[in-house]
Structures are given as C-alpha cells and as structure tokens.
Image (cartoon, rainbow, N blue to C red):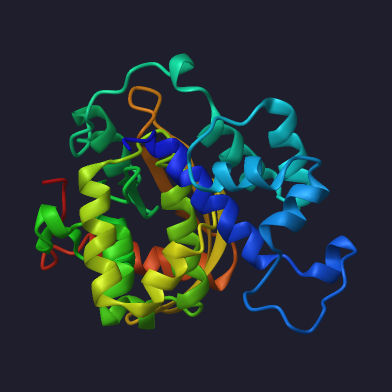
Length: 289
C-alpha cells in the first residue's frame, strides 16, 4: 500500500513517544512483567478515549487523526511545545498542504554572503534544513572548521558532528550538541517527507554510527532558535558562546547561525583574538562553494 509519508512519520513518532512513557507517570501500575518499554497500545487508547484498533491504525500510518484525537494524544503522551507542534504538522491533512517541489541543495544569495562577510568579529554560517552548510564567513571557519576544504556533497553539519573526530573535541558536550542537532534536523524537515537527499544522509550516518542510528530512531524534535554552547577551541581555548538562528526571509529554508559573547568576558576577548588571526594574510578566507 502506498501511504502518505507524513502518516508514516506520525506513526513512528507516536511509537517513540509511547515507548518513553513511564506507566507510573500516567497513573498505571507497572506490573513488573512488561515485555517492551513504555505503555502498550491499548493503554494509550484507553487514556485517549479511542479504540485500540483506531490507535493501532494511527501507528501504522493508515488513517488521518481528527483534531480532537490529536489533542488527546498530545495530553496523554505528555508532549512538550515542540513535540506538539511537530505532531500537528505531521497530521495536517494532505489536501491542505501546498504542493512542494523537490528541494535541491539550497544556495546562498550574494547579498547574504556579503552580509555575513561584513561581520568581521562574529562567527556565522548559513545552514539548510538537512544541515547543509551553504555559506560562512572567515570567523565561522576559524571557529568551527575550514568548510571550504570539505566537498559540497559532504558539507553537512550533522555529518561533521558524527564523522569528524575534531568536532568531538571541539564541543565540550558533544553528545548533547549532536542529539540536539538531530532533533532540529527532524523538526526542520517536517514538510519534506520522503526527501531523497535527507534519506541518503540518514542512511549513511546510520550505517557508520550506532549512536546516530539510535538517536535518529528516537524521533525527538526541537526548534533551532537560540542557546549556549561550550567550545574547547584548539587555538584560543575555552569559549562560552551564545548562538542564535535567524531565518533568511528570502529563503525560509535557510537560517543564519550567529555566535556572540557578552562584552568584557574572557570569551569576548578570545573572539577578538580569533578575529585577528582569521584576518591574517597567511590564513585563507572561506566563501561558499
């Protein structure tokens, strides 16, 4: 049967959230003899006031849930705001979705490249929904890696996190950073089911890395918006940086990731030092491929 990929993803998401629920957290006895983690299908169905068959068909991607059922499931599964938004996006009826063209690898417009190039003391790069790195400035390359030396077909942020040992050294909390990046990638591809490039990337990393396969399969989601990261830079040492994701209005699939530090802090001083090193004639300046 040829099913809507949104419904397939919805079913997988429901199964993942069901598996994480503690029976005691929803007022059910543990029983001590559960063969699988989390709640059973019939337990979710009872709590959501729907039939077990109806819920089973939801997990199998066979039916379209009603708004009232979605609300009940969000409550029963204890979904947070990001997870609730993801659930509703997946369940949006196909006839109300505008047709989406097959998305090629996004490109940065010249004015976007000029804008981040003018940020001489601020690391920045531009990321696509599949975590494609499509543009960066000299400070972005100095902070993270020389993106220009990476072939375009392999220039994915998530791929670097998984396959590049220096990235594991750069991020003090590499696991937390990587799990968040995976959750963000899933969230930002909600409207792009069945994407061949994303599927190829996920397949490659799933084969190469057991942790990626486990974390992707957990179906966690998160919005890419703002946060703080601790970096152990090989040249300027420890950096505690705030980052913000700014959506590029001319192409909402693109986000500009900007790293900053409060003035007067050691990290701010270290960024200034890094900027002077990045501006040195002996160091190459990167631009998008």
